Amino acid sequence: MQYICEIPQERDANRRVFGLAAGSIAVFIYLFSVVYFDYIACVQMNKFVDFDVKTITAGDYTLEFELNKKHFDHFIKNYYDDTNPMGEVAQLKLYIQLELEKRFNEMDSLGLDGPAEDDMTKKVEIAQITFAYDNAEVIEQLIFRGIEVKGEAWGNVEKINDKILKMVQK
Image 1 (cartoon, helix red, strand yellow):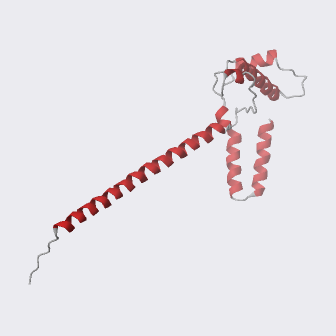
Image 2: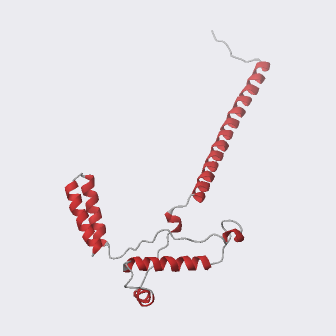
Image 3: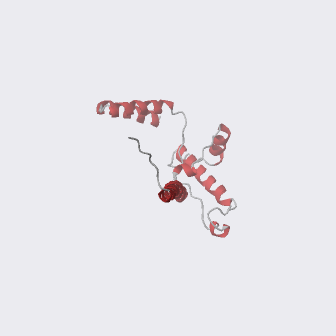
C-alpha cells in the first residue's frame, strides 16, 4: 500500500515562517558574535597600547652613538683631569652625561606630553650610560660561563669569573 505524504497548506506556511525565523535568529547570533569578538580584540589592543604608552622602559630612551678618536681627544684635552680620583672612563661618562643633558634640556618642547608650558619645567636626566668597546672576548667568556651555569659546574664558573674580571680590569 502506498500513501502520499502531503502537508496541508496551513501547516506548510507555519513551517516556512518557523524556518525563516530560526535561520534569521542563527544569522543574527553569528553576526553579533563576530562583531562582539572584534570589539573585544580592539579594546584589548587599545589597552595594550595604553599600557605601552604609560610604561617607560630602557628601550624607549636608548641612544647609541659612535665616539671617534677626535671626540675622545677633545675630551682628554679639555675636560680630563688626571688628578681626579675618578678614572678616565668614569670622567668620560660624566662628561657625556652632562653634555647630553645640557643639549636635551636646551631643545624646544614638542608638547608631546601635554602643553609645552608644562614641559618647560621637566628636565631630562640621564639614568645610565654604558660603554661597549673591545668586548668580544668578554662576551665569549660570558657565553662559556652561561654554559657552565646551565651544567651547574660551579668550579668552572668561578674560574671563568676570574678570567672576566682580569679582562675587564686591564
